[in-house]
Image 1 (cartoon, rainbow, N blue to C red):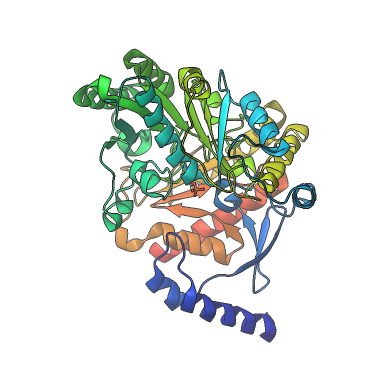
Image 2: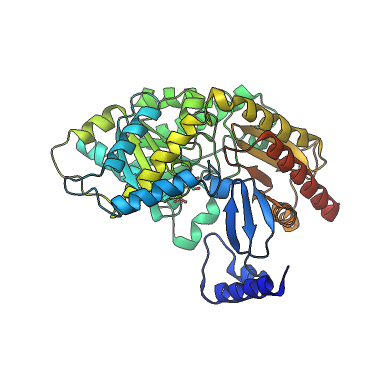
Length: 457
Ligand code: PLP
């Protein structure tokens, strides 16, 4: 570390402390400890202002499918910016980038998804889908269908609607949420934590029955939509128990309730398929997507619609009074198109990626023998390491131990980014990760777990 880099870091830290409010951050703690400045990134590694390199096991925030500094994406952005730095999609206009991207999304999504509306972030897509669901039922002459059923433990974003739909209780009281008409059903479909004493299939039935009970309590004719992430992500990387989505899909069809898959994390290759709904074999009416669509190089998101909601909105002869200035921005759409083209060309999704996915899954499972680890779960390039105080009884750590925070810091300090969600360490590396880099990731994760075990042992 040179004096210059150190001084530079200190300067940024004091500037940041003076002026910058961060997302999902305890500002009191941040100001005491000083922010970590990330100044560069290439491939699957990020570098901080002290020159320290870290393997990014989280692909940023589950988004950098192609890793960092991909020259083809840089070129696509520069070309689009030169050609058409901005234009909007309002009032009967489009751009080739937005139009081609809409068609590409319709092509890659499962089943009969056919209509695409753009936004700039996952939360905006979620807000948009919420409004489109209301619009649809009003248009269909069923305005009583106003109830939205989501799940305890879900994360759907941070705007007023998206935070309301999120089932993380910490997100609600500070902001007087959730909004009326939004319901969260428990238990969270996380077998390891909530299904003790039950087979996986029995636990599936418990979860599905809880959803049906909620529909019946509200009156199914008053329920607009059921909403879920195919794999619950930001709430702790929790894949559903066996058969869950097929049964949820059947339930929604039984009562004529729309099914909305929030694919903001699961979409665009994260599960090894293009979409999480494809992985689990169910057909949503509504999909929300963002993150991996542009590998995070540009802020762009989309709502994709199929079935009757798509037809009804697309053929309605009145103005749909909704939209954002930057939605489907030409530069963002150009980058997303190139990003998808590269994923297709380089075999980063589907059969061509399976060998590396299998390796990732088998290697992270070697951590299951670690004294801190109660369960390793995952699919595709998603992994979750559940830390427990007692492996036999699955006893959780006391919250004062702050086991996740400790482990995250030990990762950071030893060259690995792994995110802590409660007592789970979460992995979502770039889809370009090689087998050698998977070995490096697992070695570093084990080392950080060893250090954490020593601290609490
Ligand atoms: N939906 C899901 C499933 C997410 O995981 C996220 C973010 O992590 C969002 C929505 C919100 O996306 P954004 O942070 O881009 O608003």
